[in-house]
Image (cartoon, rainbow, N blue to C red; front, side, top):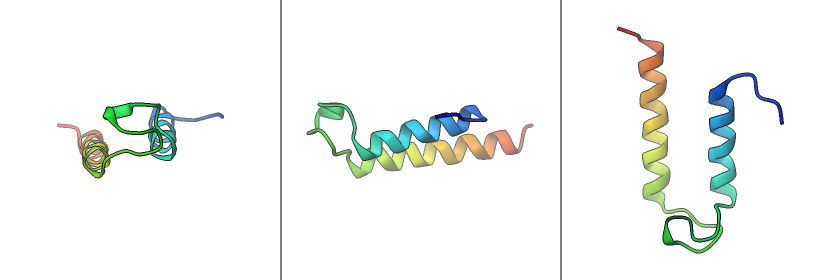
Length: 56
């Protein structure tokens, strides 16, 4: 898989984790991630995008 930007790679890793996280990831069975974990990742990505779009 080829990516043009580091953010593309980060998103592809997140998508891969959402599809099938490693066994025992966050103390859960394979294939599941808690909604809280996904919410935290989504908020973090949005904040990083906002900060990089509006440098001080």
